[in-house]
Structure formats: structure tokens, C-alpha cells
Image (cartoon, rainbow, N blue to C red):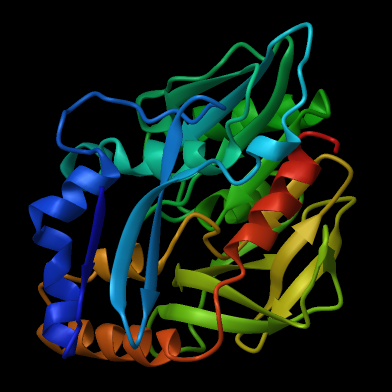
Length: 304
């Protein structure tokens, strides 16, 4: 299946989110279905360009050529930390993340931290903690304390953990660092952002790394025994790393259409216009570096 359209204005750009073709491409029509990517299955790649608009194709897993046969299947866990999961994100969060991380001979288990669901840490290779509309430093929600206890125990066992946005902040906040609200900016920081970095991303050497962001909180102080990995103009501790922790303020699983989705039904019309304008303008600059970022995360998570 392939779907493409010409985008003439910002309204069209957003309205495509509610088209049946989009839902079908993300495979989120059937409730309860979890998208898994193996060497025999496919993932969805959604591309956008100013000239061609959106184009979605079913493509082979980008890492299929690098799959290694293993005697024993390895266990990984995806922790979903989004309180609005059942309202807006059923299947979407699983599809976006597992499409990146899951490879052959691996078992990926999905747990809802918002319902106090957690994996057995025995023989667990790695954990990915998702983003969230909740705040890492507000412990009033009853699911936060069990999450903190779980992450601290996983940290003691030196299990590999990758934190995305909220996941990045909660790792820092519960492991000796601190997360705070960004009171020094007028609103959430959104869109595609170019980061100056000297890092090598596998076979990719990227000076200006383009990432997708949407956040109003940040890591004020890094967790213990970690080092700064990336900084942004508005956020010093934009990414950090230790021997078993990787914290990323940005969203490696995002693309333009997903980012716009978050603002489509925003009740504050003035703020909605600001966010959509900032997203649209940022998408016109640079190119996606998602493949390089995905490879970097996989190399870290799986000791490649």
C-alpha cells in the first residue's frame, strides 16, 4: 500500500491525520493489536517533503541485513508511561517504538506503568521508558512511586535502560539527578531541532543532528555516574549516558505527522496556532536523521 498527497496549506497538513488511510497505515484500527517487526514482517515508514507532501510505504525493517541468529531469545521491555494511553494512543505507542527496536530472536514485552505493570527483571536485557504528558517531578500520581522503585532496582542490577523525554527525566530524577519545569521559556518547545554534535552514529557522521521534540520539563541535574551527551540552546542536559543508561530529551520515534497529531484537538486555539506554526516552520529545515539515531540506540541497548 502507498499513499501520497499534495499539501497546499497548513490545514491540509494537519487534516490528513484523521484520514482512514493514515489510520490504516499505522495499523491502529483494530483495538488491542500490537505491532511487531521481525525479519518476516514489515514496518511503516512515513515520509514528508515540501514538494511531494506525505508518502507512506510498507518497507522492510531497516536493520534486516544486520540480523544475527542467536541460540537464545533475548527479553526486552517497553514501559508505557502515558496517562492518556487509552484515550489517544492505543497501539500507536507500541507501533512507533517496536518498529524501531524489535529484531529477530527477541521477545519484547509491553507493560503499562500507569497501571503498575512491570516485567520480571530476571534475565531482562533492556528497558525502554516512553514519553508522557505527566511530569517526572510530580509524585502525586499513584503510579509514580512504583515506577521509581522499579527503575532504581533495575539500575542496581545494571540493566540497560533508554529513557525518552519523560523517560529521560524520570531516570535522572530518581537516580541522583533532578527534573524541573522549564519556567524560562514561554511555552513547550516543539518541532524539529538541529543539534550540534561531534558524535558518530555508526556509519553516519552527522554534525547537525535533527531531532523531534515536544517538552515543557527538562533535566536540571544529571543522574549519578553519567556524562553529558548532547545540549540544546534551551536545555543544557538534553541527553546523557552512562554504562547502562541512555537518556534522550527528544523523540526518536516521532516524525512530522505524529508530532502534529498532538496539537490537532488542543482546546487553546491561540497556543495551538503557535505550536502548529513552529512545527511547520521547523519541518522545512534540514533532513531527518532517524535511521542514524535508531542505530545509535540499538547499538547501546544491545551492546553491538
